[in-house]
Structure formats: C-alpha cells, structure tokens
Length: 409
Image 1 (cartoon, rainbow, N blue to C red):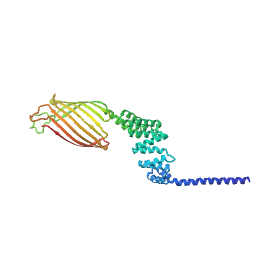
Image 2 (image 1 turned 90 degrees about the vertical axis):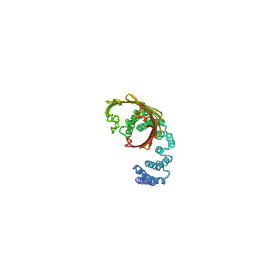
Image 3 (image 1 turned 60 degrees about the vertical axis):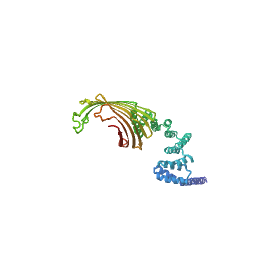
Image 4 (image 1 turned 90 degrees about the horizontal axis):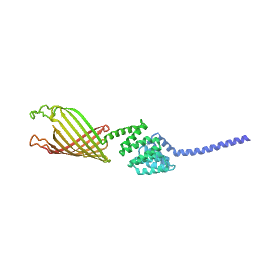
C-alpha cells in the first residue's frame, strides 16, 4: 500500500506541475502575441535596418500605445534616421509612461539640442539632475547647451564636471573645453586643451582634429603678436631703368638704359585688438635701391600706413590710410596721401565679395619738363571684386573691376 500511495502521490505531483507549467506557458504565448512585433522591431533596429524597424515599431506602438519600450525604440529609430522632430514625442512618451526608461532622457536631450530647442533641453536636464540619471552624460550635454546659449564659461565648468564624474569621457570633454576656449579667443588655453586631447589617444580621429586646430592656433598666435619686424636684401637687374621708348627719335640722348641694383627693405608692424569687434594695425616700411652705374636713379621710399578694422560675424570693414614719400637722387621727388575703405563679406563657405573706395592726393616736387604739364593730382577710385576659393581654400579665382578719375595734366 505504501508503494501504491507513493506512486499516486508521485503521479499527482507530476500532474500538478504540468498544470502549473501549462498555465504559465499559455500566459507566455499570450504575451508573445502582444509583443511579437515589438520584439521583431527591436531586432531590426539592432541590426540597423531602420526603415524596416520603423514600420514594425509603428505597428507595435499602435497595438500598445502605452508601451514605454515601443516608444523608446521608435524614438531611437527616428533619431538614427536623423528625424529628430519625430523622435522627440516618442522619447517623451518613453520617459513619462510606466515603466519609465531612464536612458531615453539622455536621447531626448540630445534631440532637443540638435534642433536648437535650448529652453526645453534645459528643463529635461534639470529633471535628469534631480533624479540623478547618468550624471556624467547629463553634465556633458549641459555644457553643449551652454555653449549654444553663449554661456561659454559655464560650459567649461560643466565639461570639467563631466570629466571628473566619468574619466572615460576625458578626451571628448577636453576637446569641447578647447572649443569653448577658442570661442572665447583664449588661444593659449585652447592650444593646451587640444594638446591634452592628443596625448590621451594620439591615434583617434579626435586627436587628428585637435592637431589640425593646434596648428591653426600656432599660426594665429604668430599672426596676433603685437610687434613684428622684417629685413630683406636683394640684387636686381633692370634692362630699362629709365623707360627708354622704342622710338629712339623721341629721346635720342638717352643711353645705358639697363643696370643692376642692390635693394634693401625693412619694416616694423604693430597690431592691437580692442575687444572682439575692433582692431588696428600700424606699419612703417623702408625701401632703398642703389643703382650700380646709373646713380641718378637711386631711390629711397618711406611709407607709413594705419589700418583700423571693424569685425562683423561674416564681414570685415577696413580703412587703410597712409603716406608715402619718395626720394630720387637724394632729392624729394613725390608724396602720396591715401585713404580708403574696403568691405569684405563671405557668401557661403567658398565665395567672398569685396567693395572698395579710395582717395589719393599726389604731389610732385620736381619742376615739370613742360610748362603746360602738371602731374599733381587728386585721384578718386572705386570698384568691386569677387573671389571663389577652391582646394580647401588654398587657392582662389578672382574677378575685379575698378574705375578711377585722376585730375592731372
């Protein structure tokens, strides 16, 4: 009897297990029927078949409009397809439906950032900070948004905070810190930050970008030095120093028109910026040419130039003005005073337009060879030009038109 009871008990136990197993299997089958499209859509998304995933996840969301998981993957599919506007409402559902998908909050902030919806992004950043969701990533996005909001100093602090919270983000944060310093025209700090980016992973794409920026900054630092000096020496040969005409009957007494000469040049330049919008440049240059045989044509030129500049977002307005004095054969020969205005403006990334006006006053100190001749003059000119850049702005093609009126006899 014991064996019989044991057998019955055993059978009953097995049958009960089968009943329980069958009960949960039915539930699982029902659940699979509900989430089958969602699972298929998620699989398509993970295999980067975004168009197929989009259609499947739309159907899954239609079957279960309150599914935060369907909302999340639908939003992420839109995001991968760079349809940020459509992604935003889905990601909002993912962070408001139950259960809440916390990771969707970071993706939502990113989409709002991409569409420049700064105020909305700030609100969700505040919520993420309050709930402690992925603090390092939130701090990073906070920095990006502060950059767009022209709060560059605050952005630097946010990137530093992100780097401290997650050291694996150091290179990315240092790169953004460098860009922030660049925006504030702190070229030294930017250069140091770009160097940090390179040192952390020299073989990364980000390090390559950082190296390129560092090279540009090095050239800008050199160009931005307030004082610059130069000196040059050259030997030249001119086969027609005195411009003897082809028709020798006009100037029969002119001879030895060809000659060599030694040329010496020197210059001193001063540059100064008054904030971001205004700067000035002052230049003095000296030119001396000594003829080897025709000493009568030795020349000395002194030039003084001042150039105030106004900087706009996509344009540059300069007013180069100056005075040039020429000495020939140890006697004052000519003086020229000039003032002008030049507007350069960018049109897209590869075109630049230019408009200019110029006034010159020319005075000649030597007596003219003919009484009726008067070379003193006022010269008024104006014109425009167009530049097309190519080969990554290393070359350009240019068309220029200029017209001038000179009051001389």
